Length: 298
Image (cartoon, rainbow, N blue to C red):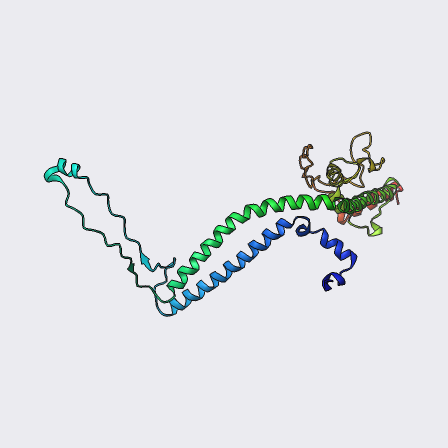
């Protein structure tokens, strides 16, 4: 028995079976093959750089491409037929000298032969990679589809917890709004609580009662993917009869985080968020306090 498998726990075995390599072995084979080619390519380039660096130290001319050790002679022009020469008469061209077909040796620098051989290997590797990359892309897409289909139940559980947390966050926000609204209705200032920055939270998630708020858009996108039941939205998350969200203070500028397919993105409202505390300062605070004392407001 393999020692590695013996040391693996059941959870480790299950995790290994749900990898992209295990769910689509072809992708793993192609990926390993391209990885080996890339390693060989890096090695060849390192060898070529070392040779070129050595040539540069010897004050040799450093060509961009490897030199060849032979020159292939040009092909001879086709000779004219006897009848054509007879028709041309005195204007017939002189017979061409036979071309020397013997390859001529070209003087090369030390290392050029190695560079030429390495360059051919490098070109072959690049040709092979050009063939394998489209196959790898297709295998990656197919394997990802299979893996996501296999892990969909686990992903649904994760997104379910996330949607539950969003519902809980929206409920907590509305509870905070309701609590502070009772003080506002009594004419009291609740800045003495040293409250959390509820306006920042409102700007981030919006009012849960507003279907165009960021929080509701997140839930709607989860519903589109089949990860959330839209019937799970609390019934109390409805707009008042006047159609305006009921928030602690003036609503912050509405900024939609994303666009749900099939729904239009609302125009951004650049109205700055109102400050939620009711305590004025400076001269305005003095006048306000004086007015409350005169009217019996305390």
